[in-house]
Length: 118
Image (tube, one colour):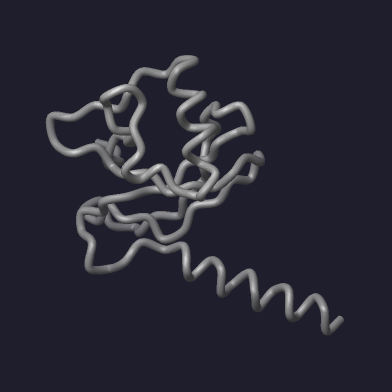
């Protein structure tokens, strides 16, 4: 029983550490889930109820994969196209748990900003 309580406490602490800072609005990074081969799989993110707040409280990878931080694309910037080159670059770059600052060719690896439903 004690082990279950300690596990729950550590899980909650890890979850709080994964939230985006309140001072970053709009956020500059998000979470993606990367498979072993570098393929992108969907992350599940809990977001605030406000349609004006683009931050994410916590993101998890329920379908497996490595949870990595990735920059959000700047204005006028698009994410690199999905393909073999991007998968290889993501697989190699994700080893440190972050894709921030990494590139595929001469393009930075980034994610499109989250837009609220209209």
